[in-house]
Image 1 (tube, rainbow, N blue to C red):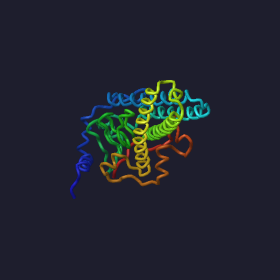
Image 2 (spheres, rainbow, N blue to C red):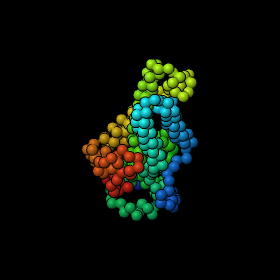
Image 3 (cartoon, rainbow, N blue to C red):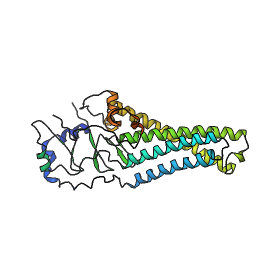
Image 4 (cartoon, rainbow, N blue to C red):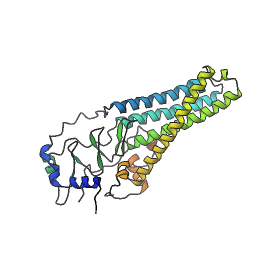
Length: 299
């Protein structure tokens, strides 16, 4: 049977001589506990700044163009609270997804001493990443941007300037969900505002001039529609990936399934935490994923 390039590469990794532990320098000393994870990538930082700018632009238009000038105080208060709450949760989820270690494997640990300390049994093999000189757990992949191997890496997202992996997938899913919700909410309010302004005098619809008001609303409408479609698709893709317990990279490479199959509900709890609670919707609740062996070997 002919092997695909990806399968051939992983087959090479299984060969003991490929590890070459003598070529790996000892791993650097770990940083202090609580050290913030941050990827110094110019493109990712720019995308993250643009993300915050777009959310704050929507916040500005919703508040100062539509809600504050409105004479219906109940409408303004209710929609203002809902929109600001969703926007706050979206930005909080963005920060957690960006600043959380996605599941990086210790760099440079493929040393002779470390391999001997694993006390591997006959027939057990380990994977070694030739790029970061790390012993790779099963289902880990190397990210060329983060320059690390990431456990259960789904993809690298420039919008959060980080990989989406085992430890931060929950926050990325919440980010896409809340962005989709505020986009939908903004589009609904823009629609009502246009109807109201067509029925009333345009000069009384906003504290800005009519041309400025129209331009700001059209830009917000375009932004909301674009991000509603984009984040809704990403949210659906991520939920499907979680339920099937197959990352985006594994689906793309069509990798052979070497891990136990679990129910969809168990897969959801593995990402969002045990047990089901309101904490699933909170970016401030760190999921309890249970204690798992960081290294899994193929026999």
